[in-house]
Length: 181
Image (tube, rainbow, N blue to C red; front, side, top):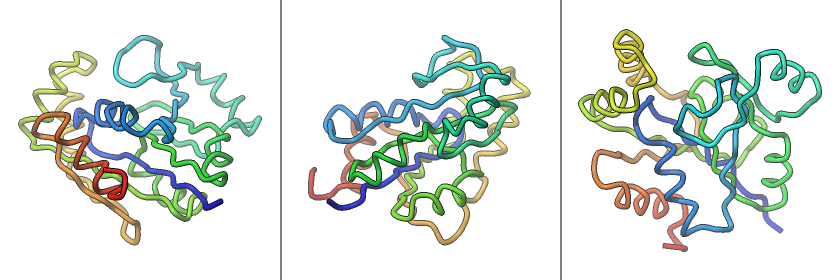
């Protein structure tokens, strides 16, 4: 059996990563959508995540519950350890990622592909305002981070998400799995 891939989905806040990922899973039932653990309060919308306290997160790190973990935007994020097992077993796993964690992920997952989702600044600002999770100052800070470069040396596929979601999903699947589309 061949080794699967970690598909690390990155992009600025508000670009629609979670929507694109959810759309990719429906036509690709053999792909796993990874559920992250986050030190965020439950029920805040967006992705389906395991809400944990900072103390529980640190205990999970110590127990080896994550194959990768990082901190960003004042929160901690963890990818479950069984993702490594699934990828080694031939499964493609789709995970929302931080650009700052990509180099570490590439070491753990040699066949990793980075799906870089972009959108115009106007689209990003509208989406961030619409979700109601950030203050104007936080939105401004996130928009400044939107142009942050990705590390070099990675296998990166870039798509834009300024049009209809179904079009973006189709382009993403075609770029990642041209044989299946």
